[in-house]
Length: 623
Image (tube, rainbow, N blue to C red; front, side, top):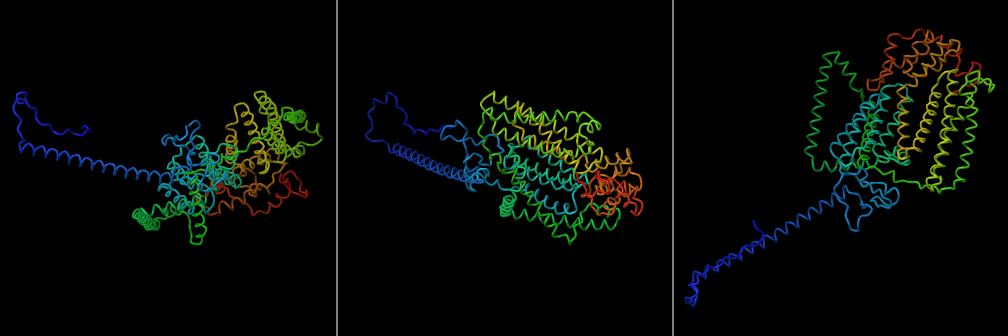
């Protein structure tokens, strides 16, 4: 169909012969009427077309107005406060709305950007509120809160993983609704955090469990924020605390908005849940009363939530709810902690910068030259060189070497701040001086670990000794990463050090430090009974030490395991708060319970060697 107006009908053409005939004086009445009707019809059609055109234009204006209002509403809800055009974009040009989603799309981010929350550094780091919370996020948050109230009140074990799964799902759904993409480093942080939560499920000792839980929280926060700079990684690991209050407000507003438009669906969901709970309670009670084995199984699986624990369970519910909402809110609108930057210091001249570090390198080299004799020698070489036995020698210098390692890392950080930055020659100078310092510090780390090995061989392993040795070993890993950054670039150094710390905590927990302590002390006792074993110390170890302590002869075995047996066999810990180390200890002690009434333990607790000191010593050395 053509979009041009149709032509008016033309009168029929006359033949040439007709031109010679005289024309009539007046047109016939029928022709005049037909012409008038034709003209009237054309005018009516034109009027109708004009009216239709006006209506079409009005309709188009109405639709455009509606679309504009809808777009403005969506922009107020989800768009950033200000969109910064890329460099080189002509003035007045708009950034295209399409394209792949940006994980930082919800934040203002750029320096000087304004935000609805105010001006300043904090304001430009904070993004606008995220989109309206979705039902999948709400259900995941509610599941986290309910599981926290049911499972977290009786201790720590596999219940932490059970609670963490719906919280992670809430963050995942919130990130997807906000348009964030899953990146490799996000997967690394998330998988590492969940792996760290396996430590409480495997080990009974409280101190590696504490380290693992704190590290898992830090990695989860980094997974939500996506930080990559030094300050970003440091602050981002604690960034979840900043999202607790905004997350709760976001959740309340989302529930109100959802409830106003879907009261019928909420009512149906509540009725369905109530009916399901009633059916489970009624038929579960009937089946439990009908079969004792089923009653035992059901009693072991279901958490024991008594009325007297109501306030504690309510607190755990609120804690799980607030934590899951904070995680989801952060996933949807993460704060850009990477926007906090520290300007580099004023570069110094080559001589002014390099001379103090070269002098420090010479001091390290002189110290290491004397240490190599001790490192490569044995007990007799130590005595010949220092006049001290190797245990006294180790105790004399380990802590000093640990502090020397920490101070060296601080010196390198300050040196990089004021390093000369003139060109390739300056970069070569910086790499040569600091690389040499890193290598020499690695030898100091090896010397400190050797000293600890000598001391442990003489007096046994303790929690403090294994902890500081693990710390010193991790500092050596950090020095290796710094050396690698000097060769391949320092872009990934902050995140690499964070990964190494988390991996160290995970390995520390999985290796079972209490089990290693017990194993080393039992091996010393088996090799040299005259050295004795500090029963007063090993009896306070956790259930992870039971497999090693079970090899001791009587009465040492019973004295070492009496406290653990009372806690393991007579404790009423549910399955979800029982670690694998605890279950293994229970199995061993059920087969071979302790013997005697504990009278011989007083003699063993005072006559044995305690941490390298004889009984007449007046103090206890925790080192």
